[in-house]
Length: 148
Image 1 (tube, rainbow, N blue to C red):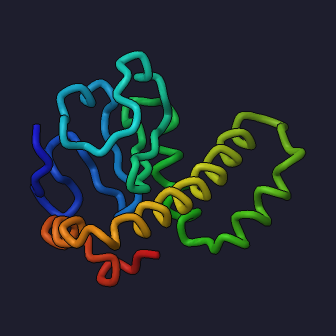
Image 2: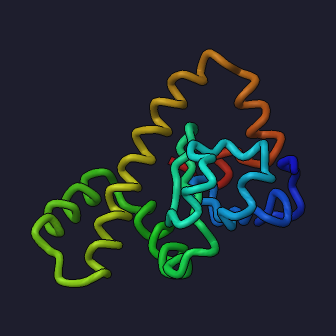
């Protein structure tokens, strides 16, 4: 399968674009989506909740039971500054009351990691103008979408 835009929220029938930095796909379909910039193509990883691409996109597993929660939580966390995320991580450091605390801490750390990976990727891709042309072609002009 190739990545082609079907509508504003999907590249193809299997990939949902929640926002520029957050996509969702059923991990059982990963082996058939060759163009997805996915860092973990291991078939044994189908039970993973999410993965991070080399270019700083979080890919959620649509078939995981906590997908609906993550789909709502990540966009909210992505609106926080780095300082706000670090403050929340420090506050949650000693909290392990239930599964929600663990999920929240996972998401906080994943968002910080995503920002680091994206920043590093953007610095490397400044020397590769073809990448920016590809992103603009598929509709990911970060200024139009309010990207960070």
